[in-house]
Length: 57
Ligand SMILES: [Zn+2]
Image (cartoon, rainbow, N blue to C red; front, side, top):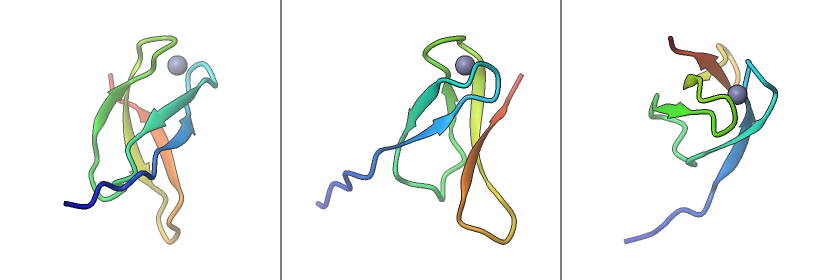
């Protein structure tokens, strides 16, 4: 089993805190901002590999 140590950080759209996410960008996962507790989803920008966080109220 290979563990991918590819943790990265994305910016919370609500409070601009850096939120740690897993390295598996293929999964749209629900996470919570550790600072403002906003539910967030990781999304991928169309046409790029760039990830961003989106509110998921
Ligand atoms: Zn936040």
